[in-house]
Length: 165
Image (cartoon, rainbow, N blue to C red; front, top):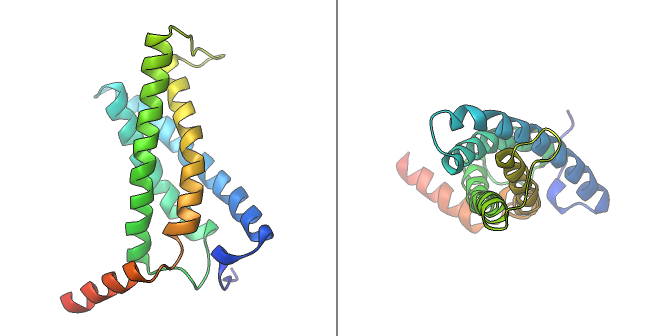
Protein backbone atom coordinates (compact mmCIF):
# COMPACT_ATOMS: atom_id res chain seq x y z
CA UNK A 1 0.00 0.00 0.00
CA UNK A 2 1.31 3.42 -0.94
CA UNK A 3 2.07 5.66 2.01
CA UNK A 4 0.79 9.22 1.89
CA UNK A 5 3.16 11.98 2.78
CA UNK A 6 1.06 13.96 5.22
CA UNK A 7 -2.48 12.74 5.35
CA UNK A 8 -3.55 14.78 8.35
CA UNK A 9 -2.93 18.11 6.66
CA UNK A 10 -4.63 17.28 3.34
CA UNK A 11 -7.45 19.16 1.74
CA UNK A 12 -11.14 18.44 1.68
CA UNK A 13 -10.70 15.18 -0.25
CA UNK A 14 -8.42 13.86 2.47
CA UNK A 15 -10.87 14.94 5.19
CA UNK A 16 -13.65 13.17 3.30
CA UNK A 17 -11.55 10.01 2.85
CA UNK A 18 -10.56 9.96 6.50
CA UNK A 19 -14.09 10.73 7.68
CA UNK A 20 -15.51 7.81 5.70
CA UNK A 21 -12.77 5.40 6.73
CA UNK A 22 -12.97 6.51 10.37
CA UNK A 23 -16.74 6.04 10.28
CA UNK A 24 -16.25 2.45 9.02
CA UNK A 25 -13.51 1.72 11.58
CA UNK A 26 -15.64 3.26 14.34
CA UNK A 27 -18.66 1.28 13.21
CA UNK A 28 -16.66 -1.94 13.55
CA UNK A 29 -15.21 -0.84 16.92
CA UNK A 30 -18.76 0.06 18.00
CA UNK A 31 -19.95 -3.44 17.11
CA UNK A 32 -17.13 -4.77 19.32
CA UNK A 33 -18.12 -2.24 22.01
CA UNK A 34 -21.82 -3.14 21.85
CA UNK A 35 -21.14 -6.85 21.46
CA UNK A 36 -18.95 -7.09 24.55
CA UNK A 37 -21.19 -5.09 26.91
CA UNK A 38 -23.70 -7.91 27.54
CA UNK A 39 -20.83 -10.23 28.49
CA UNK A 40 -19.38 -7.63 30.86
CA UNK A 41 -22.90 -6.97 32.15
CA UNK A 42 -23.10 -10.58 33.34
CA UNK A 43 -20.42 -9.89 35.93
CA UNK A 44 -20.83 -6.15 36.65
CA UNK A 45 -23.46 -3.38 36.69
CA UNK A 46 -24.46 -1.33 33.63
CA UNK A 47 -22.05 1.62 33.85
CA UNK A 48 -18.88 -0.42 34.56
CA UNK A 49 -19.86 -2.76 31.71
CA UNK A 50 -20.21 0.28 29.40
CA UNK A 51 -16.73 1.42 30.46
CA UNK A 52 -15.14 -2.01 29.89
CA UNK A 53 -16.82 -2.45 26.54
CA UNK A 54 -15.74 1.08 25.54
CA UNK A 55 -12.13 0.24 26.39
CA UNK A 56 -12.34 -2.95 24.32
CA UNK A 57 -13.72 -1.03 21.35
CA UNK A 58 -11.09 1.67 21.86
CA UNK A 59 -8.23 -0.81 21.44
CA UNK A 60 -9.82 -2.10 18.22
CA UNK A 61 -10.34 1.50 17.05
CA UNK A 62 -6.69 2.41 17.67
CA UNK A 63 -5.33 -0.63 15.86
CA UNK A 64 -7.53 -0.07 12.80
CA UNK A 65 -7.25 3.75 12.74
CA UNK A 66 -3.48 3.73 12.93
CA UNK A 67 -3.30 1.14 10.15
CA UNK A 68 -6.00 2.30 7.72
CA UNK A 69 -7.24 5.83 8.44
CA UNK A 70 -4.53 8.21 9.58
CA UNK A 71 -1.55 7.49 7.34
CA UNK A 72 1.53 9.50 6.57
CA UNK A 73 5.11 10.34 7.37
CA UNK A 74 4.08 13.36 9.43
CA UNK A 75 2.70 11.22 12.22
CA UNK A 76 4.22 10.95 15.65
CA UNK A 77 6.11 7.85 16.76
CA UNK A 78 3.97 4.87 17.75
CA UNK A 79 4.56 5.42 21.48
CA UNK A 80 3.52 9.08 21.22
CA UNK A 81 0.47 8.11 19.14
CA UNK A 82 -0.63 5.63 21.80
CA UNK A 83 -0.29 8.23 24.57
CA UNK A 84 -2.21 10.85 22.59
CA UNK A 85 -4.82 8.34 21.39
CA UNK A 86 -5.53 7.19 24.94
CA UNK A 87 -5.71 10.82 26.16
CA UNK A 88 -8.37 11.59 23.53
CA UNK A 89 -10.07 8.26 24.28
CA UNK A 90 -10.09 9.00 28.02
CA UNK A 91 -12.03 12.20 27.36
CA UNK A 92 -14.21 10.16 25.00
CA UNK A 93 -14.78 7.65 27.79
CA UNK A 94 -15.96 10.44 30.09
CA UNK A 95 -18.29 11.76 27.37
CA UNK A 96 -19.49 8.22 26.63
CA UNK A 97 -20.08 7.33 30.29
CA UNK A 98 -21.86 10.59 31.08
CA UNK A 99 -24.04 10.31 27.97
CA UNK A 100 -24.91 6.67 28.73
CA UNK A 101 -25.73 7.57 32.34
CA UNK A 102 -27.79 10.58 31.23
CA UNK A 103 -29.69 8.62 28.58
CA UNK A 104 -30.35 5.68 30.86
CA UNK A 105 -31.02 7.32 34.23
CA UNK A 106 -32.42 10.73 33.41
CA UNK A 107 -34.46 9.91 30.32
CA UNK A 108 -35.68 6.50 31.46
CA UNK A 109 -35.90 6.87 35.24
CA UNK A 110 -36.29 10.61 35.64
CA UNK A 111 -38.54 11.52 32.72
CA UNK A 112 -40.01 8.04 32.33
CA UNK A 113 -39.35 8.04 28.59
CA UNK A 114 -39.25 4.71 26.88
CA UNK A 115 -36.04 4.10 25.00
CA UNK A 116 -37.39 0.83 23.63
CA UNK A 117 -36.85 1.18 19.90
CA UNK A 118 -37.75 -1.78 17.74
CA UNK A 119 -35.80 -4.62 19.35
CA UNK A 120 -33.67 -2.45 21.63
CA UNK A 121 -33.96 -2.49 25.37
CA UNK A 122 -33.34 0.75 27.29
CA UNK A 123 -29.74 -0.08 28.24
CA UNK A 124 -28.78 -0.85 24.62
CA UNK A 125 -30.55 2.29 23.38
CA UNK A 126 -28.70 4.40 25.98
CA UNK A 127 -25.43 2.75 24.98
CA UNK A 128 -26.04 3.49 21.27
CA UNK A 129 -26.84 7.13 22.01
CA UNK A 130 -23.56 7.42 23.94
CA UNK A 131 -21.55 5.86 21.10
CA UNK A 132 -23.14 8.21 18.56
CA UNK A 133 -22.36 11.31 20.64
CA UNK A 134 -18.79 10.17 21.33
CA UNK A 135 -18.03 9.48 17.64
CA UNK A 136 -17.75 13.18 16.74
CA UNK A 137 -15.35 13.99 19.59
CA UNK A 138 -13.23 10.95 18.76
CA UNK A 139 -12.83 11.68 15.05
CA UNK A 140 -11.81 15.30 15.57
CA UNK A 141 -9.58 14.50 18.54
CA UNK A 142 -7.75 11.71 16.76
CA UNK A 143 -7.43 13.59 13.47
CA UNK A 144 -6.27 16.86 14.98
CA UNK A 145 -4.27 15.51 17.92
CA UNK A 146 -3.62 11.77 18.20
CA UNK A 147 -2.18 11.16 14.76
CA UNK A 148 -0.60 14.56 14.19
CA UNK A 149 2.97 15.38 15.07
CA UNK A 150 2.80 18.16 17.64
CA UNK A 151 6.45 18.27 18.58
CA UNK A 152 6.58 18.74 22.33
CA UNK A 153 5.19 15.37 23.37
CA UNK A 154 7.28 13.62 20.71
CA UNK A 155 10.43 15.30 22.01
CA UNK A 156 9.60 14.39 25.62
CA UNK A 157 8.95 10.72 24.81
CA UNK A 158 12.10 10.51 22.67
CA UNK A 159 14.13 12.17 25.45
CA UNK A 160 12.82 9.71 28.05
CA UNK A 161 13.40 6.76 25.70
CA UNK A 162 17.02 7.81 25.11
CA UNK A 163 17.67 8.26 28.83
CA UNK A 164 16.26 4.81 29.64
CA UNK A 165 18.28 3.10 26.90
